[in-house]
Every structure is written in C-alpha cells, then in structure tokens.
Length: 337
Ligand code: AHM
Ligand code: MG
Image 1 (cartoon, rainbow, N blue to C red):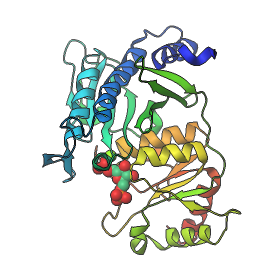
Image 2 (tube, rainbow, N blue to C red):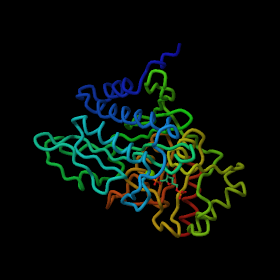
Image 3 (cartoon, rainbow, N blue to C red):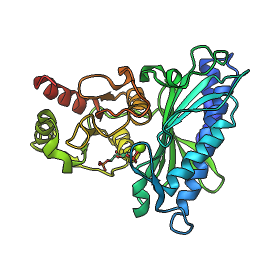
C-alpha cells in the first residue's frame, strides 16, 4: 500500500505548516480545512445535479450582471458558513457578493482574508460539464489586532497571497493548492469523504501540445494574439498544437497544469479588459502556475504584480508553459502592447 494513501489534505496542510512555521498556532491549517469541508458539501450537491433541484437559474443576476445559478448560491453559502465559523477569518470576499463580508468584530478581528469564486463556470452545470471553486488567501498585516477595513484588507497584489488553490468538480473531485512551497493535488475519495494526496509537487511542463481559448472571439482580439494563434497553427513552437476549451477556467487550467500548453482570455470586443476577474480567478491561478514552474501575465505584466483597484476588476489572462507564454509575450511586445 502506498504511503500516501492515508495522507489527507488536512494532515498534509498541518505537516507543511509544521515544516515551514514550526511555532505557528495551527489556525492556518484550520482555515484551509474549512475550505476542504465547504467544497465537499458542494461536491456532494454537484454529484446529485439532475436528481435534486439544484440545476438552473436562481432567478437573479449578480454584481457582474450575470445570471446566478442555484448552485452558485449554494456554493457561496457553504463557503461563507464554513469559513465564517473558523474564528480566524476577518473578511470574506466572493464573486457573488458586491462587497466583502466582514466576519469578525471587536475584540478579535481575524487574521485572514479569503477571496473566492464559489462556483466558477457554473453555466456548465446544466450540461454536466466540469466546474470549480477558486480561492485566494491573504494574511492581514496587523494580525487580528487592527480593526477591519474590508476594502483595504482585500486589495493587495497577488504576490502577497499566502495560499491559493482550487477544487475541480470533474470526473473525480480534486483539491489543488499551494502555500508557496510547491503545488499539491488531492483527490476526494467518495467512499470515505476525504481528500487524499495523489499529486505531490505538481510541475507544469515547459511546453505542451494544447492551446485553450474561446476562438469565437478571434476577430476582436488585439492583433498580436491573432498572429500568435496563427503561428501555433502553422507549427511555430516546434510541434503540432491541438485546441482544447472547456469554458470552465479551473478545468482548462488543470489540463494546462498537467499537460502544458497555454490558456488565454485576451481583451475582446465585449470585454475590453478581458473577461476574467483579477482577485478570485487570475491571481490564485497565477500563484499556482508560478509555483508549478509556469507563467501568468496580462499580456504585458506579471499577473501577481498588478495593483488591484476593485474586488471585481477584470484582467486579460495568459497562463501556461514558459515556452508558449514567452512566445506570445514576444509577439505582443513586437506590437508595442
Ligand atoms: P463565471 O465566473 O461567470 O463562471 O465566468 C468565468 C468563466 C471561466 O470559468 C471561463 O474561463 C470563462 O468564463 C469562459 O468564458 P466564455 O464563455 O466567454 O469563453
Ligand atoms: Mg468565475
């Protein structure tokens, strides 16, 4: 029997913490285990989609003006509840809430800020296709002693993330996370309800065979992106590329992490700054990509260095293997973009 079979995510997080911060209180592990719990609740509901009344629209729109799905509401509630109960989270910020939610008040303000997209790609639920939860964690500078200032507590560049990760609700459910010392993947064993270490120290290949982009938007991409995609089709980059696009960022990134290649969501006619959100989509994905040896950029800047101006701000996102991302950046730089 493999040694890792019984290494659960919770145990792994605790081991990691003891290794890098032997005197830490353990409350960071407690926080991450809240995410593990909430996503097991979400996974259980997704597994029953079609059998119970969780599929389809909740009849409202969110702050982005997008239709809210019933499972968006459920996943948001699961994360708010499981993290809100942890006792060390000061602020929770979600794609589904216009403003950050202040959890703890005087005398203990909470050391951590968690920003998340509770159910990314949720329209895919209707057609039984993979979706995900994405999260990003910051530590408040003054620990739990300074009063909360939700806007200021949330708006920090991605370099200051202390952890990030996602859960992919796919053929199996996987938790992938990093606290800044490598990327580790766990598969949910449905028979006993635990995330078990299955992918230790995940690394992204330096180059890979896939590009992943919504090509229906091609006509409105900036010229450098169009030329880049044409170059890949013509075999520049030294291989024959295939295209793969799920339309769920977590699923498209997970494939890119394992197999290599490039995922892009450039500026388009409809979304002139790109569609994806910096704080709860691009930042955590960029953190994982870099930890795995890949790259993430908005076409000009490293994603993790962007100074955020708003919780829901959008950014172009290019993420993947060093070879393909570098080639794209060279072509964009040639355009002066
Ligand atoms: P959502 O947060 O409203 O679900 O939107 C984000 C999703 C990403 O998962 C995915 O990469 C992208 O939207 C797909 O967009 P498009 O349908 O324009 O290709
Ligand atoms: Mg999303």
